[in-house]
Image (cartoon, rainbow, N blue to C red; front, side):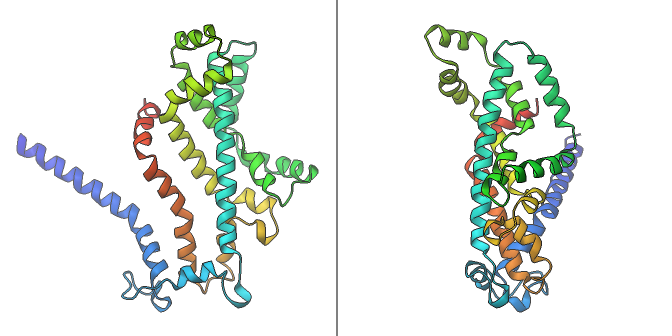
Length: 276
C-alpha cells in the first residue's frame, strides 16, 4: 500500500512539474529572445550569444523611420495603471464597507445591481463611454484612460463579502469612542484587510495593465500611447524587429512579477479567503 501511494505521489509531482514547464517555457523563450543577438532571434531555441542591443534599441526609441517613444509608452502604462488601481481600491473599499456595515434603504437593490452588472458584457458599454469621453473633452488625455476604469465591480463584491465577516462589535466600539466612519475604515478596517487588499490590488492592477482595446479607442497621439498599444502596432511595421518586440514584452511583464514577489505572503493569505 505504501509503495502504491508513493508511486501516485511521484506521478503527481511529475505531472505538476510538466505543467509548470509548459506554462513557463514561453516566458523563458521570450526572455532569452530579448537578450539574443539579432541574427539568432527565432532561429535557435537557446541562443549561443547574448547582447543588450534589443533593450538599447527600446531605450533609444528605435532607429530611423521606425523611432517610437517606447520608454514614454512604458511610463504611460505605469502611470495609468497605478492611478486606476488606486482609484479602484478606494472606491471598492468605501462602497464595500457601506454595503456591508451601513444600514440604509436600497442596500439590497444596489447589491443586486452590482451582481447583475458583473455578468453584463462590458464591451457593450464601449461606445457610450467613448461618446461621454468625447463630450467632456477628455479624448487623448490621461483622464480618458483613468476615470472610466476607476470603479471595479468585482473589487466591490470582494470587499463587501470580506467586510461582512468583520465583527460589528469592533465597529460599534469605535463609534462609541467618537470615531467617524472614515476613521473607522482607515484606522480599523484597512489594517485588518491587508490580505484581501493584496489580492484585489494585484488582480485589478493586472487587469488594467493588460488593457488594450479601450486605450486604443481613447488615445491618438504617440506621446499618450501605452506599451500595450505600441506593442499591438509593432506586429505590423515592426515585424522585422523580433528582438526589441521580445524586450518590450519582458518590460510589460516586469511590474507584475515585481508586485507578486513583494506581496507574495499576503497573496497566499488572501487566496485562502477567496477559495473559501
